[in-house]
Image (tube, protein in one colour):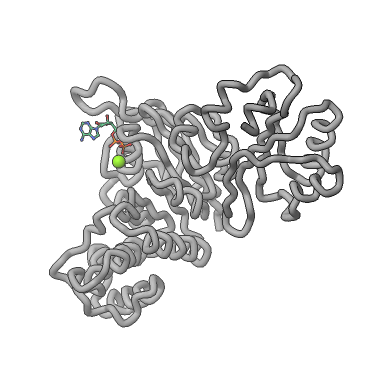
Amino acid sequence: MRIISSAIIINSLTKQYPGAKGKALDDITLAFNSGKIHSIIGRSGAGKTTLIRCLNLLEEFDSGQMTVAGQQTHNLTSVQRRTILKKMGCIFQKFNLLSRKTALENVMVPLEWQGVDKKSAQLKAREFLARVGLGGYEDRYPSQLSGGQCQRVAIARALVNESKILLCDEFTSALDPETSLEILALLRQLNQDLAITIILITHDMNVVREISDFVYVMDQGKIVEQNNVEQILLYPQHPVTKALLTGLFIRELPHHLQHSLTPVPSEGDVIMRLIFSRESSQSPVIADIIRQYDIPINIIAGSMDHLRAAVFGTLLISAPYQEATQKLIMSYLTQHGISCEVLGYLPSEVCHG
Ligand SMILES: Nc1ncnc2c1ncn2[C@@H]1O[C@H](COP(=O)(O)OP(=O)(O)O)[C@@H](O)[C@H]1O
Ligand SMILES: [Mg+2]
């Protein structure tokens, strides 16, 4: 068996809509690893939907190449096109279920389209409805299902052809936060059980945090930043990424303190940013420093969270400045796997007053 490490590879993909000023896709080169979950984020109009529509062969691009599961997508015969489409399923914000068909019949649609006989199609559709947690709901119509259940039907329909790639465009936008989380958990389960590659667009940074392995940031038709989810969340580089992540983690000092921050060590406090990543120690390091070295550390702001099972996040702290104290804190933290950066110095009355 040939092992394909990239589910989809695109090379210099470019597209401009007729009459548009700028390019919707501007020279995009990417490889989506098999079996991983990829999130594409970006402001409205960045080109995300256009990209996913190109991946799904719904949209033509002007130039560039694309390979899906090892197959080039250029100049396809209709049989080749079908074979490629069979490898990819899609879910959307609006579920797009057929209202006159039951849940089971909706899931059977792609199988019938592929010419599978009715009996086998029913069997397979039942199996996939059960997989998405809807065993017993076969005969319900979409109007008799909740939003979350409709999205589950749509997921079953997208995967029933044994598709190995799932493309999702804003699929949680119409769901409440709790239902979104359930759908995310389901996708992660399917990703693990069936080794499905998932490529999703979202504007919800909680979705990104909950589910992604890799994150791609789009702006004006370009990929401006890409990395694994931890690096993107903890060390965002591009201004667009930082703007999109605002509010998810507190990384910067409150405004009123930022004005007084100086880069020169002085009488007063040193301000540090601590970043806890997956590898960081779970021990209460700040409390330990205070206790062991009798340094009065003050927590200014921060936000800690979980990325799957691990704690991560940022913490902004201040401590009375002395060169030796600063060195001691930094080396203690570094030894415990916490990255630590001096943001600057503040007169102590600013910090505590
Ligand atoms: N069918 C279309 N015809 C013309 N312009 C379009 C069409 N679809 C999208 N665009 C334009 O292409 C750019 C990218 O749009 P889109 O891919 O929908 O971005 P996103 O999904 O990131 O919001 C935008 O400037 C948008 O106005
Ligand atoms: Mg869009």
